[in-house]
Image (cartoon, rainbow, N blue to C red; front, side, top):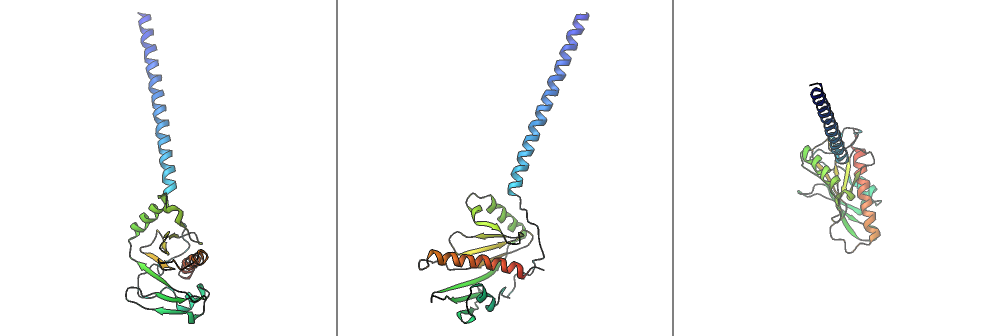
Length: 202
């Protein structure tokens, strides 16, 4: 009888050990999955520390975000080389005559987009294997700037605000521009984005 009890006790102990081992393995597996999920979330997480109030920057109104003189300064041209071209569909557009005699245009528009859609747009671009190479933080570190790879414009996005600011720094047709000229115009576009952030930071 004692032998039988001893067998039962040993079996019970073994069962408990197996159960504890299973619980530990399950806990370790769950912890690992949580860490992996947390790591993935961290990669796609929008981490921007806001440096001010940018309500005026993203406000959709009839006022142009830049004056003619400001555009001239950005492009290192005289005011006489830039002409304001007010159109109903594009109230903030400028026709530009460059120093080499070439012509182009520059425009700023604010497009309506709900805040949640702005956040989703940023997340998609950050996680997309192709588009992530064209999005970066602003100089202030509290906005994202996305460059369209071939259409000559930038998008200024802030996950805390509705709407998107579009900066068109050249036309889509650029067959008559050299690579150096294209790079200069692109730099003007980025300069404009950071200038707007500084100007409308409250």
